[in-house]
Amino acid sequence: MTELTPDGLDEQVNAVFATLLDAPPARDDDGDIPLQLDACTLYVSTAYDARAIDMWAPLVVAINDTAQAAFTAAFLNNKFPELKFRLLADRLIVGCRVPADPLVTPHVDRMLGHLSQAFAGRNELAISLSGRAADTPQPDWRDDEQERERTILRTIFELQHADDAISVDDVVAICRSDQQTVLNVLALSNNLETQLRSDAEHDLDPDDAAHDRASADEWKNTSDALRTALRMIALKA
Image (cartoon, rainbow, N blue to C red; front, side):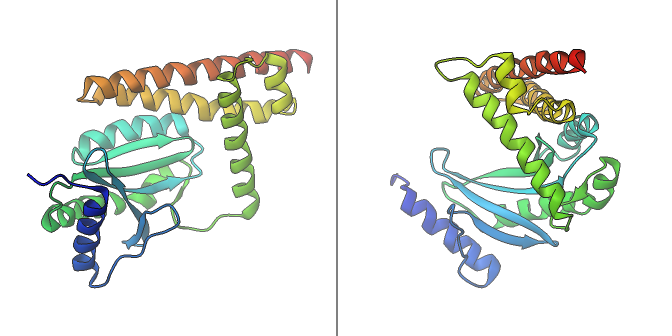
């Protein structure tokens, strides 16, 4: 059997989507292929090591009820076994993996059909999760605020894994001693931990399950640090 190279896989992907789109697919700066499917932006990524492609899209964004969203993701994973729903911070993502050795056009077309079914209920999902359907506008100020909170969370997470672990005073300073900021960032961290533990329970591959559990433990450490910072700020108020 001829070894499948990254270039060979890219050629297969280009050929399949050229057939489906009636035109050569265009790639973005990350090498992904963005597509429009039922008014949603869908991304096609090539997983070279797995000899597969990943097709994924944000379904609901700016979610306020993230606790409910975690349960919703688990419910949807049972309802749509061909797809994978994940809660990433304040976004509900849907995706799937298609084997690409070889990549078969009918298989891709069928998975696009499953994704289309998932997209059909996005407006109702957005309402139930106190969020908004992806690819719909929202005020610029909220975009900036959510991006700031995600940046704060990532900063704390990365510094916890640096050579010199950060202190609770550092966490408070990064959050600018603002109680609401800590609460919002803590909610994001809790959601990531919850989703990873849910993923570990549903993973078929033991290695994937172990990786998700380890990642969940790391986010728990971040959540614990944020709770300590929250206690410090609240008691000083």
